[in-house]
Amino acid sequence: MDFVSGLRCRECGRGYPAEALHVCDYCFGPLEVTYDYDRVADTITRERIASGPRSIWRYADLLPVSDSAPVDLGAGFTPLVRADRLAAELGLGELWIKDDTANPTGSFKDRVVSVALTKARQLGFKIAACASTGNLANSVAAHAARAGMDSIVLIPHDLEMAKVTMTSVYGGRVISVEGSYDDVNRLCAELTSEQPTWAFVNVNLRTYYAEGSKTLAFEVAEQLGWRTPDHVVVPIGSGSQLTKVDKGFKELWKVGLLDEEPSVRVSGAQAEGCSPVATAFAEGTDVIRPVKPNTIAKSLAIGNPADGWYALEAIRKSGGSCASVTDAEVIEGIRLLARTEGIFAETAGGVTIATLAKLAAEGVIRRDELVVAMVTGHGLKTVEALTGSVGPTATIAPTLEAFAEAMGDIHQRENEQPARSIR
Amino acid sequence: MSVKVRIPTQLRTLSGGAGEVTVEGSTVGEVLKALDAAHEGFAGRLFDDAGGLRRFVNIFVADEDVRFLDGLNTPVSDGQTLSIVPAVAGG
Image 1 (cartoon, rainbow over the protein chains, first blue to last red):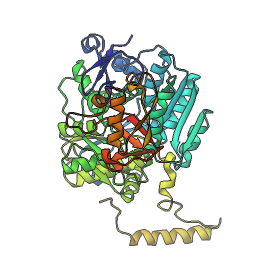
Image 2 (image 1 turned 180 degrees about the vertical axis):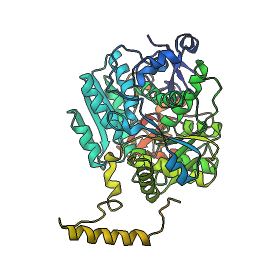
Image 3 (image 1 turned 45 degrees about the horizontal axis):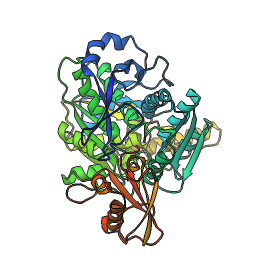
Image 4 (image 1 turned 45 degrees about the vertical axis):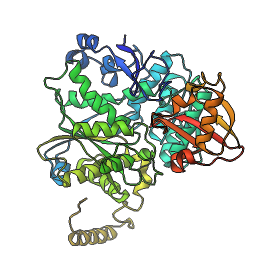
């Protein structure tokens, strides 16, 4: 049994039933799931959560759908890794990495898709669909296969090879669109009106889908021993994840799972080639001007972010910040995380780590804060980004002499090179 | 100029269920006004009190967001398609 009381427009407050609706009929504002928090509070306990599955479904009481057998590949409950070596490089104190590369299809999208398709199946949908920058495509195709649903996934034509393969392998239909993600998204928004029997997870099921990202906050708090961090760094594509992480911490307090009211500064990370939210933050305006993206961080390349305004609001209200980093810094961020902590992130993770470094260097993220950085996708998805940046140390003939010679050269080179640093 | 306007599900109650309506106009603003004249109620849904487009309404002319063009003053030519699309999608 779920605790959903209905849907409500975030803008004008009009109420709707818990069906496949995502937009207010009157003002086009986004619909948000509402819960009966008193009833959740009466039911939920730390022990009840601890005895649940090691997945997002341990938090089912705070999710918008309940099912004894959800559409599930095991999303969530990913490692929260103490990152002392990275912290030392950045001059930070207690730093943790939420390693969401460990999800079944390698990104946080498994959280939202598991929720969306469980709800879609409950509502009677047989076809799963989405507009995707790649990670969502992987996850929708995989979860649809798992659920025995057909899938129709629309992606921009210039995605990384791995993301295309990792979507196509599951046997659904993959439509490569000659345009940007924003073009694909517009097409899907229009298709939703023409194909009402398709569950577009991030269009008509978006209200439910987005709620899945709250589990990032739930897990971080539980894994820290039911404490909340002082500061989290979250990448921004559409802005949905950041908004829901902020909401997640607040909900834990609302239903009585925390000893102290949380005060979590939420900071956003964008790539400079697609930074409409960071730009609005820097300019101090409420207006998010759409942009034409140009960055290697394709999973964040959303020029017209649906939740940009709400992300900005969450950042400002929480006392967080928002910054953008260059593609070169993104690559350095990926390498820094890999060499200090052994975690290989995709470009979006590079954006997060590089932004973390930047905000730490500026003193915005402080040494006395407990900091969590969300690393949301696996590096194997975007290996192209590192072409020319990493590779074999030497290529040699299979002889002892050649090896000794190469190692001699390497020694010499390493002695000449200054210490590497991202700043 | 005769322009085809694509109507999203949320507004089809106003257009008698039609997903496409053809109206006259030479700019986006004129087309939307003509749409409201033909099917009363559109203006209230699309525009805020100051007369601008609501925050969550996207308008596309020939598949380009009018915010990259000239907003409500964006010219439209005969036979073009204008799409009204809810902004909240994706990501």
